Length: 87
Image (cartoon, rainbow, N blue to C red; front, side, top):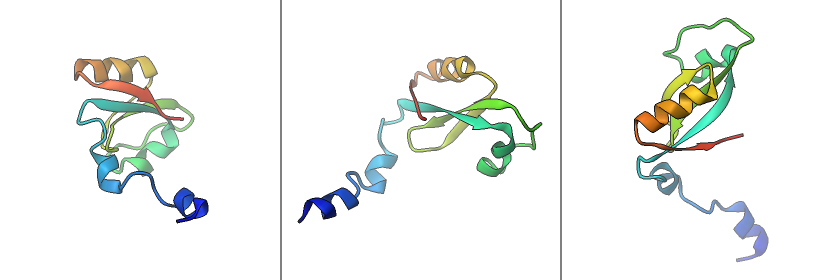
């Protein structure tokens, strides 16, 4: 296998990535209010132009959307989740 082949192949399988964190890790991701309904179809339409923060389980499952990073982290702590930031 060449270096080029190694670089193009995923280091982890999709299944392995999905269970990463074992239900104990979540990530906080900044989102724009105009993108919320597209990203989370069950969410209501929101006023455009707001900076929000989404909390997701390590496998990508959405947990909540809030108006502050601190509120997202506090919710994670309430559920005994370790948070990491995603840029």
